[in-house]
Amino acid sequence: MKNKLLNMLLRFFLIVLFTPSALAFPIEKYAGLAFGITSTEADFNDQVREFGNTREVPSYTNVDSSSNPFQIYFGFRFHPYYSAEISYIDYGSINFEKTLINESTTDSVTTRASNTLSVSGISLSHVLTYPLLDSLILQGKLGYLIGSISSTSDGTINTVNTSEGREQNTSFFNSSSSSLDTIQLAVGALYRVNANWLVRLQVNQLDFEIESQNEEYMQWFTSLSAEYEF
Image (cartoon, rainbow, N blue to C red):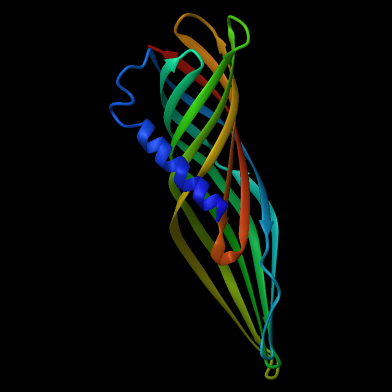
């Protein structure tokens, strides 16, 4: 309940911030393009379930991050210590293997699938900056990501009739997409190359969950970007 209330308040604050009147008098603007790598921590809370004489056992293996995450961003600097930023961010893909075994007195059904999740969307952020040196600037960001989670599942279903000894294999492919709106945090450091160009090293952190599957994920996107002030 507290997280939902915080999300609502932050969303309202960001929408007000990004109205045309709020953005009327920036002292500076900047834009950048970032590429990097993503690391993932997954928590699979799916439990063993029993339905009458049937027992269902889930298991997960080989969780890794792949693809090429990137971010395109545009910012408005209202003060040397404060900016507002809007960006499109793609966290890349999360890959994992899932096995689901259903056993009863007459049948054994084993489902094995290769699963892929991809998160992307529009991020609105408050940016606090602190000039540590003339050419080195520290940043902290609190923002809101509004986007989608795309998922695919490609696998086989193996059914064995234990009483008759018959076996059947079936292939399947499923894809789906769901909306996502959640808080996003980031910290970074900028190095000023000259009057207009900067290099930025940044780490974004994102939490999300797939409620229907009892799966929770935490992603870190570490990126290096070129930023231009104008």
